[in-house]
Length: 319
Image 1 (cartoon, one colour):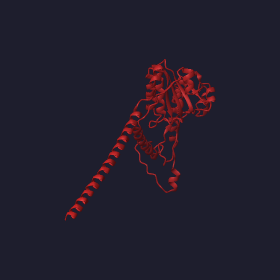
Image 2 (tube, rainbow, N blue to C red):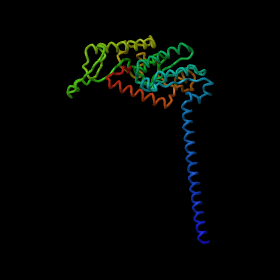
Image 3 (cartoon, rainbow, N blue to C red):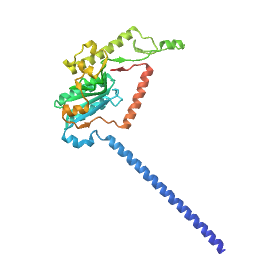
Image 4 (cartoon, rainbow, N blue to C red):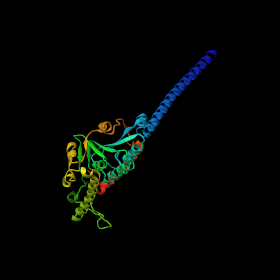
């Protein structure tokens, strides 16, 4: 009996020790995972805080002694892109309002885009130049400054280019597709019902009438006229080419652009800051959009653009 009792006690003891050991292992494992998730959360929050900080926050020492402000305008100019009017204007305002800003450089690399977004930025540049007359704004072209990009650049005090930059393309376009013959070959009948005589204008499944062509042509001509007037107001008597050439939609390299009066001189951002402004330290004021907000905006814009394509509406662009 004693032997059996001792055996049972030993078995119970082993079981308890094993359970205690397993519990300890699980607790340590849970603690490690807890530490991991805490570190991950800390890293995520830190990243969000860094992204939320205003541009140029690490350059306080530079700002104190005076600097040249830099704003980047890259890519297609559109409401849902980084080069939207709201983003660019935010950066411009921050740059002009900073006490240490000696001059502002708007570095452009864009094929163009929305005439409305381009016009909004153009007008804001003129407003800021008037409000801060002692702070010049220079447009510096990297690879391309075409159409809407040039619309904006023409508001600057001066435009600097590289010899190989592409500049110009002062025109307006609207593109779309027509599927009338395709529908007929497939034996599909288009049933379009509208209220309003011209509500179905530009429907890709209906023939384009002479009225449609004339009406859209007049619309684009009006937008082109606004574009031309803005360029003439900005560049003035520096323009050297004839209107028929300058405003034909053609584009030129940087050297040719200078000869035509579309640009003023050769130079990049560093050159302008150092040799023209005399404050070679560049502080970036480009607006940094919240990544989550950007994702939501892009999803919404993509859905709207998809619906517009299905409906057959072309987008008017300065390109």
